[in-house]
Image 1 (cartoon, rainbow, N blue to C red):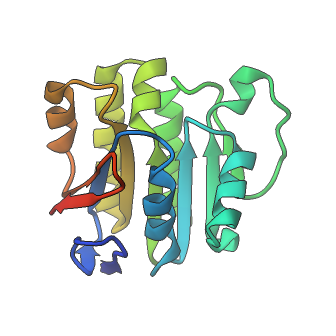
Image 2 (cartoon, helix red, strand yellow; image 1 turned 90 degrees about the vertical axis):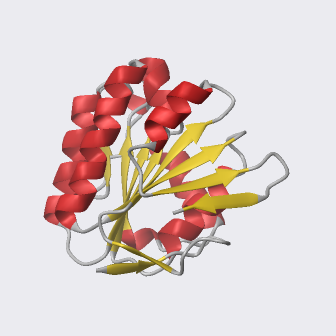
Length: 192
């Protein structure tokens, strides 16, 4: 299955099973790329949020005019921080951001329970590594990329260039079929 990709300089389409690494300097600039990725050519998408709550993800989707009826959100923060949790059919929780097994299991369940063109956004690997550690995060990312291939889905995985050294970035880069590198000035370079 081919998926349309609305990112300047990237191929017009990518095959199912492709994971994309989104390298970024600061968090603010990622929303535009992330929501453009989720908006097009998709039947269902999952946002794995280790950085913001489900409510904040919903606000972002609404602000960027993304069809929320296609969204499932995995909130990894609210339980640990003691925030109130809104139970909804499309919002799920894991106990803590470092519960990477729980995150991978939820990604697998989403892909198994949905059909058609599916996209996954993981925001962010950097936060996962902060709460767990880099090796565990790498293993979880590898598992999720494998799940994308198994289910003919595509995904984008956020990683901050400000936090990780070149060796770590290169290690993660090796997992993905494409890299979108967001510059400080908002410029985008891509490597597929």
